[in-house]
Length: 65
Image (cartoon, rainbow, N blue to C red; front, side, top):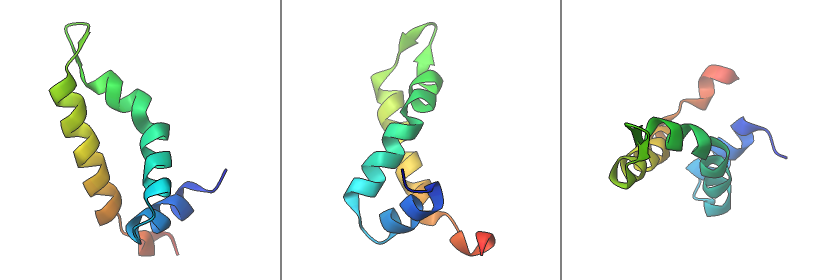
């Protein structure tokens, strides 16, 4: 499995498969944070997934050179 930084770089350059892989890797956390009162809030899950995508695109890879 490619390193996470490689996946982020690929996703930032438009590689949809890399973004899908990142989302799948972090999906358990997204789902966990989307549960309110023990029930999955689908709107919250979708919002957090969008925020995750934006975070990947805004992530500064130069900090890890």
